[in-house]
Image (cartoon, rainbow, N blue to C red):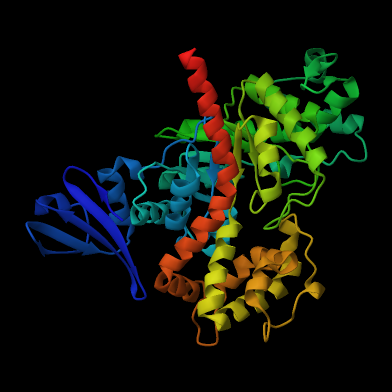
Length: 488
């Protein structure tokens, strides 16, 4: 497909031999910002060039719709993630087909994933740029530098042009499951918080939180526990935010995430974090607490749906007490059963994040066209799972999966929960490993996907579309209600 301006039209061609950018213009001077070979083409000129950083930058300069934009806190939004750099076209098609009214985040990757795969932040933006062009996507997109834990990560994201930064102070969350001590209260970073214990207690004790279905009074024990558990995390999030806003030379926004910890975020703790971050001048459009159990990587929700409904409803109510930011669902891939529930509990004021599911879609294509490569990826992933699982919420058991893929229905393997999680978690070691000829498996995988890119895009459009449809339906209903109020 093609994007056009008054002076240019451009598209991307995918072939088994690689990918090419094509840009056409009546005036050859219009092609000067691009690199490649120019030849006459009818009444104008045609440039054929590589999918290079220089050409991606020239495209973003020429086409406003290819420049990442902030997500904002008004529209239901979904981040799709792309570990391989080849998924954006299919993901954009899913938004076109089944994601009407949603704000798409088509460039999304954590610094952790970038480092594991040897990718740089700019390549994530560039590959999303080319993917949008390939699909002819003109609906705009966001770019989320996910799970940022350091100022160095912020700097990398800013230099690449990311506009959304998910600040993750989870390493500073304290385990309070055994209760708290006076020493721990003293160790709260009061100076960094501009606070003290007496003032904290005066602000919170006796406050009643209206959570819609319940009212919750804050006790001294609850607020002391919240300060011990999340005080250092709040201080760290504020430090990261100040660095982000002080360093940015373009518009940026922040999400706050403490979901990748072992301990559930209580409602008092959510309120504490929101109130303290606000007091410290932090602004955010979305917040990801640690929900009830059941959010595992790459598979359906396995927890109690009634408990989740109550949990999300209360977290949404707390967000409304603090201005109405979105509730963010991380590890949201393939949780089809709870999407309608999540939409209802948050009134559609939600941000869904997926990532690894697009990689698993890629493996479906590999299974059909290079089963030997899939077998190598399986061997490495299965061996790596025991080492990698500590970084994820997973419960797969290797002993419930085949040791080799000989005679195995690979489509069923990729769909089954245990093997799906093993493949999901093992991506890091699999994609950087080399085969017997010294070829990196990630490069082999990319070549197969480029040779069958139309098929990969079809698989993605259908699978990601299943994620989007329930949220798009809610977005449409919200717009209808808004329109009705406006008419009235």
